[in-house]
Amino acid sequence: MLKMHNIRKSYRTDTIETHALRDFSLEVNEGEFVSVTGPSGSGKTTFLNIAGLLETPTGGQYLLDGQEVGNLSDRERSHLRNEKIGFIFQGFNLIPDLSLFDNIDVPLRYRGFNAKERRRRIEKSLEQVGLSARAKHLPAQLSGGQQQRVAIARALAGEPRFLLADEPTGNLDSLMARQVMELLEFINQWGTTIVMVTHDPDLARRAHRNIQIVDGQVSDLRQNIAADEAAIA
Amino acid sequence: MLELRPILSALWRHKISALLIALQLGLTLAIVSNASVVIQEREERIARPTGIAEADIVTAHFMPIPKDYDLLEAFRLDMDMIRQLPGVAAATISRAPLAGSGSSGGFHTKPHQEVGSTGAAFFSGDEHFIDALGMKLVAGRNFTPSEIRIMESSSSERPTITIITQQLADTLFPEGNALGKSLYFGGDDNPMEIVGIVERNLGPWPNSSVAGNTVFFPAIMETQWYDYIVRAEPGQRDAVLKLLEEKMAERDAERVIEVKTLTEQKTRYYAGDNTMIKVLTGVVSLLTFIVALGIVGLTVFWITQRQKQIGVRRALGATRTAISRYFLLENLMIAATGVALGTAAAQIFNQFLASEFGQPALPLSTTLVCAFILLAVSLTSALVPALRAANISPAMATRSV
Ligand SMILES: Nc1ncnc2c1ncn2[C@@H]1O[C@H](COP(=O)(O)OP(=O)(O)OP(=O)(O)O)[C@@H](O)[C@H]1O
Ligand SMILES: [Mg+2]
Image (cartoon, rainbow over all chains, first blue to last red; front, side):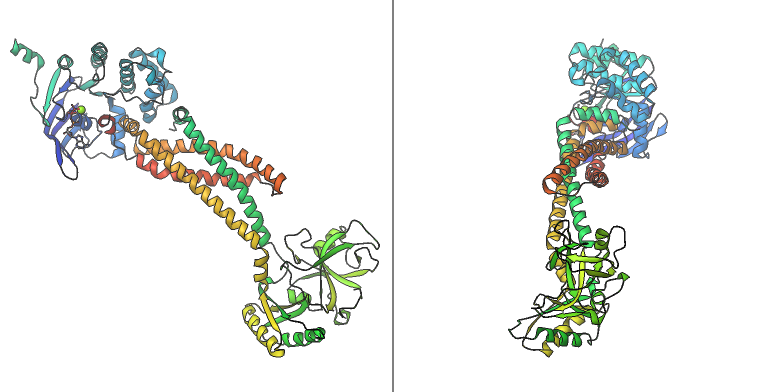
């Protein structure tokens, strides 16, 4: 599904150059649920941005769904994001001026679906996250957990193969965090590949596989949580 | 796909600032379209055909005229001299049209009438006057040399024939048979037969209600209210002007000679109109500039406010084009609202101006042209910010707080 080889990413300002990712290699298989942990500033978000085609790497190779994406134009990358990738953000990132219905509609319009198809998908995804009754509400009228569920509905409406989440539970209390996590697990069971950055070790452990990023590199590739726990025991 | 409905519902959440800018645009349209119609009217006034070869005409006048001075003799000697000058096509003694001073009176088609007169300006001149002014005789004939009365200041002789403009002929004789008919001046009973009709002459006051109604008498009068009217061959006007001044001084060195081009006198006559045009053009430009600034400001402000949202839209699959298009469509909606309000306001404003100040009526087409221009100005103002918004990185979605 996702294959990164020797990805490098550096940010250059006038005075300093930050190497956010160095010789970063990783493979994520179709249908996997991978959690990503690591200290603050280690490069987790940078990795997710490159994986989600929000940023371009400084060097290295990235294959998404078997396709080399390094040389794609901005337009092609936009279309790929729209069709294959769903995003869930820590801050929900719903558009405050639009109703829930219209928020979910945003990526569907960019996809070019007709009105009927968009309505069908919006209603279906709102139902999946249990918020059908609130379609006309504004984001501000919802709790944080509800907003994140809408954001998930928005990510799901386009039926992406690949879901990227950057600390999706970071702004939620533990009960709501668990609900969101359950929703993600449910989605994963239906075949969507998920990569989730989290600071919560309990949630990280619930993924199939946890990778740790330290100082811009995968510190322990293929670290298996189960094996890890067995070793402790 | 155009996202009109979501843009509209997002705009609805910012309706106050959107409405304010729309109102500013509407007000600008109301003022600009009313100003344009005035500008247009003034320009048409200045540009309308005068019926004379104004660009080739030079006028001359001399002062002082001492007591016992034989003015009629001076006229005769000057004319003989001027008509011989190189570059001179024709010359007469009359008064300069388009210059803002002259004579006018009421004319009738029957004797002894007191009411219902038609106002017209009148000039005297010899048989050279049509040629000297470069006018076109469209019916009848010119005066003959023997018909020209040389009138001393004490004379009370009345002219018996006249040449009038087509416009006056049409006004007095709507059936179109003016030639051979008689004209009466004031309430008197002296008939003046219309022997010729010239195509057009606006008279001394092109902005007045009598403009275009003009009567010519066959006379050279002993009066200090005269102008030598000299038409130069095409392209010779400035040379003739110089020569005229020189030769008139040569013939009689005692007098102070004043020579002017007719263009110069016409420009002076229209100075007020020209000032009005300049002031209104300035107002129109300034208002348009201010409205453009307002739109640039608001667009930049909204884009800055929505940076995060733009990043999120990019992350969700918006192309750069889609982002720019969003802001241009948003701008277009605000501008269209403003222009719609402005079109109505322009008409109301115009009705007020028409009833209070007698301003010309505002045709809808003028408002629509102005509206179209303002829409274009609005879109152009939003263009640069909208294109720059497209450069906001999709990483904004995950990076900013
Ligand atoms: N736009 C940028 N310009 C300069 N440096 C940047 C930029 N974005 C990220 N960095 C730097 O790159 C490094 C990795 O940042 P990143 O956001 O990927 O860390 P993270 O692991 O997501 O941290 P956190 O857990 O705090 O979210 C950091 O040192 C950060 O300061
Ligand atoms: Mg981060």
